[in-house]
Image 1 (tube, rainbow over the protein chains, first blue to last red):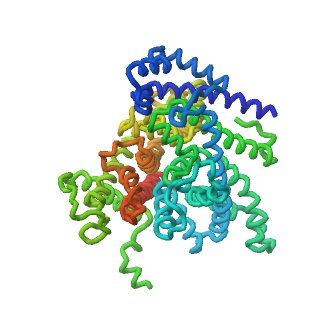
Image 2: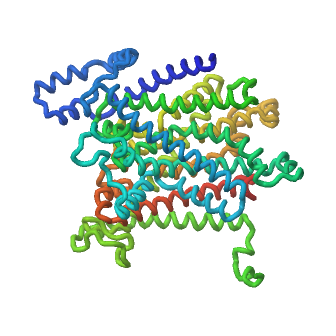
Image 3: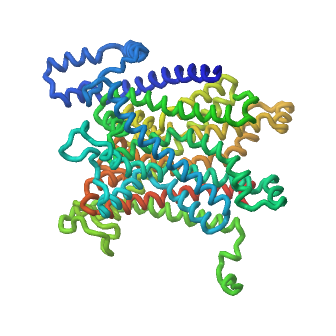
Length: 322
Length: 282
């Protein structure tokens, strides 16, 4: 409990720092929010002046920063310029959509990556190990968005199993989308994101398992006459599973990055697409809120990883970390 | 079998010679790509509406785009640009890492500050931080380079920090200090020769990430301007033509980028083998 309290304090300090730094970065940007807003609306000179005072263009930066941080403490994130509704609602809406995408592919890539890693490690040096290893190296070096494009070409353009882009069927309102329509559109992005995520977890599991296979207790188990797969089950998987799960929890940062790219390719209406839109169209309130929510997201992942290590593994419990 | 082995010159070489050969070949390939991308005359990239959207053929290896431009030429151009941006960004990022490692080795507060900075930089998803930095600097090449440099230094800085700490507490450094040698002497004679390998390999291993992140951010529209022949631009343009079945527009440029990234990855590993004797036999 004390540990969680400590983490909460850390998260708070981190969020304030992230908020301040990202605010200053936007502030330093040569891109003018008033101009981009006016371009969206088509404003007259008087309206521009009103906007300038509304946007506090002439207020000193530190004053604006303090105001913004104070608003933030009251959970007042402002109104999104693109969507014209409070940022909190946009975030809630988009983040739920993305969270489903990310968690689905996170779980799929975790399970498949782990299984592939175990198979490759257990059969170290065989052709199946070489295939899995080669596949993982190839995936690690390929840009995620390119894989997305290839998958889109294969499944949407050639096989025509899925529509290209457009998360909502033409002619229907976003609110009228049925559950199955929406599930149907989830498949390709989730598939891409899972494929991309498999590589690191599979390679890690494989290396860990190979290390275990070279250990003394493995040799002893062998000398006792246990079969290969039984040792892998009883010594291998038990030892690799926890660090692998931990690693998977620590990959939230890459998961988010992958989601941004994949959502952009498949026009999946999630937080990633909102990020790109907010960035390109200078929707400052929304962009800042996305930075904060993604920081929380990554932090939660890392904290779960920490907790798993501390509380699940009895060897770590007594030790004083850091 | 033995006869074939005799004929194959690779078999008579030892591991070190093979490593050096591999490094030489990779460097040759990369330099060729880089140089040819800069020797290509942009005037040959004229729009030719007679040859629009052609599938790959012997005349146009990678096909042509909707303006009739040869995709092979554009891809090579893009790769050259990627290599250049990757090089600047990874060198910058290893300089940042060195400064940070130096900062952490001064005293306890410096160390705490660096640990906190690493925490801070890894707490925001890389891609989002890149977008923010790119917006902050007004997009364009500089934004991408600075962005990549400032998001990729953490891993190398961590390695350097541990290394320097280890060397600093070792017997021979203690002995040198007892003999009255100053900090500068220790840094020059004991620390630098040992970390220089890490720095070179670390810089090379940042390279693939730098190239990939540059392409991703350009793809999303926050990086290089649409007039540059970058791979990210080519791929994002190709998106509107994929539905018409012009698969070569996306496939070849991406595959070429993948190969360059892989080459840098292998290069980093091989040079590590060459410079670090403990890893030479792996």
